[in-house]
Length: 265
Ligand SMILES: C[S@@+](CC[C@H](N)C(=O)[O-])C[C@H]1O[C@@H](n2cnc3c(N)ncnc32)[C@H](O)[C@@H]1O
View 1 (cartoon, rainbow, N blue to C red):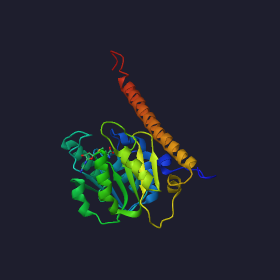
View 2: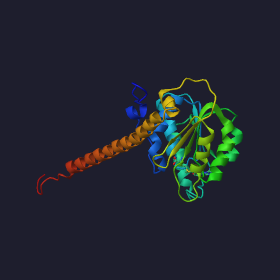
View 3: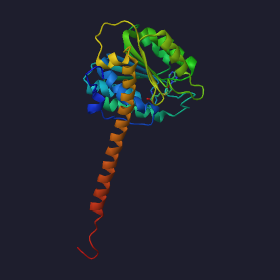
View 4: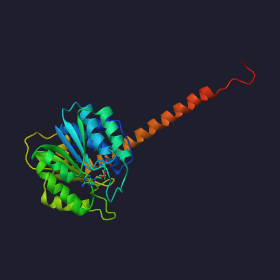
């Protein structure tokens, strides 16, 4: 995408989501997978986990890309005004998945975000995802409390920055950040995903980071389009796989179903 170089990230080459559950996060899975691959974070923190779609995408990328880091999932697992209350089965499922696939690299902190703050040092988190309650005040509070915990050069993701429903206000808070910050990017497909880089840090930029924080709006537009297509591509591949599996089932049933003609032994 930049000049003559082709952008061909790992999400296109080899990513098959291991856990797929209903969530509006589905539109951003390829990007999340690629972002983790380039950041190679030692510490990932998610605020607002629910059934784990975004969280386990980060974990899967860490594992498949041999990243030596840990990921913390923080949620009261009670629900909020926007998800509504839910029962313990959600937490139990997430805990079982973490145990089955990501033992030793994931930690679930079942508590309120403010209670978890004390467990993290300032300037320590390399990837922070803010996805709790989506009112303006709640997103602002989560950002204000957790920003000091993010390492200079670290990335903060904000989900639902395009959702203008009910009393959602992540979009409004993110618009304010866009005025104040230079290295900031917004995916506007699905419910929207905001990406902000905390100033500082020494690391050399990957191609993805160069595109995200490019000053060239054309480059940024192409990146946005790229991940719209990547999400469609992933979904199409999953559908094709399901279809193939169903066909396989039918053929197998057909095989068994070829009952011997009556009377034959
Ligand atoms: C939108 S959901 C998270 C969605 C998830 N990231 C996904 O991939 O689908 C928000 C979650 O944040 C949790 N939550 C909201 N406010 C919270 C707070 N202050 N402390 C702890 N959990 C909170 C809710 O329990 C809910 O499970």
